[in-house]
Image (cartoon, rainbow, N blue to C red; front, side):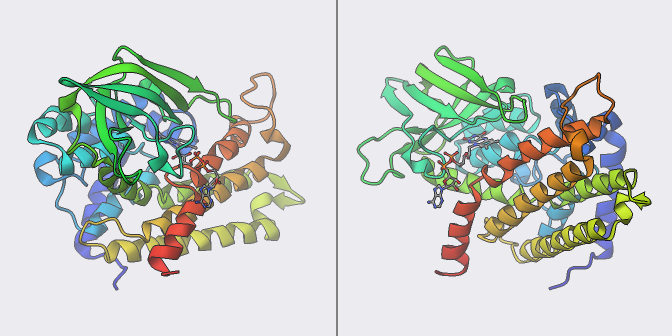
Length: 390
Ligand SMILES: Cc1cc2nc3c(=O)[nH]c(=O)nc-3n(C[C@H](O)[C@H](O)[C@H](O)COP(=O)(O)OP(=O)(O)OC[C@H]3O[C@@H](n4cnc5c(N)ncnc54)[C@H](O)[C@@H]3O)c2cc1C
């Protein structure tokens, strides 16, 4: 195993750095770096620039805009993007529905949906989870009943991220309630969220923001040619999608940026006769976190250098589990630096700095990382069975 970069990889990385740091507007990158909310326009602008440079969907088949890159080049593409605080291409399009359509969709579906999906001319949202079907996703109850050339969809989804911005939804629906196994009767359906019978209701989160939604379907008529692949084969496509999702959320580069920001503020925070950054106990905590992150980065590089067949690796569960814990540790570090200044939230009439006021909501918001994409307990079960053979 060789973890140092070859001269070609160094040149590749430097070219990416240049594009990320000169082409993506500085104000958008600054908002990402400081953990501020991005508008729909910010996300679309950054995604379109990346797509114009061939950098939005490198994981797709080459004929649909993908790149024939080595695993190391793919790693550099994402790591450098995070280090430059560039918003990542919209995951629902680039990591989720795009690859599913490219691998399992008909030629007609590919031609109709892949170009606007890569360009973010269609904003997709993910309709998988339901009130009683999260970790146990195969228990989902939303139904799609065939009626002539259409399916009639009834049911409810929940935790649908950014559905308020979405044009279309990709949805797991039950098409055969009598299938012998609950995984067997599920299909993967695409439809416009403006179809009659679709209602989107926002959920206010603990940080005060509106990032997720409930989505209700009441007799929504969906053309049958918007089914991906074969009827009742949706579980296979969903597992493929979830493997891609997990690998993408380790967030080593993002956590490095967070720790860098925390150190910057710790250097401005008085403690005793010096600054907090000079405090030995605080410095030891930072060093430990940086070491843990380095260990995760080396594990990620090992996984990357051993996975040239393009298949999701079960080690992605280790990366998701540890990556999400370290993202949380970094937000906790910033919260502790802010101390009492973290308590007022976005209050103009209080003198505490904006970064400190935002550290509380950010800490609360990041509780999500150990839940979405498969909770930590679920990842541990996968690690126990598929890696440790227990
Ligand atoms: C911010 C956020 C965004 C999300 N975005 C989307 C989205 O866009 N689209 C979408 O479809 N879904 C989305 N989700 C849903 C997410 O996939 C689910 O929340 C997740 O799968 C957990 O399901 P649940 O919430 O039903 O919890 P449950 O499955 O009810 O789990 C509750 C608790 O029980 C534990 N548990 C459950 N089963 C087991 C088990 N077998 N062994 C041990 N412990 C177990 C869990 O780890 C958890 O601690 C999002 C979630 C969050 C938090």
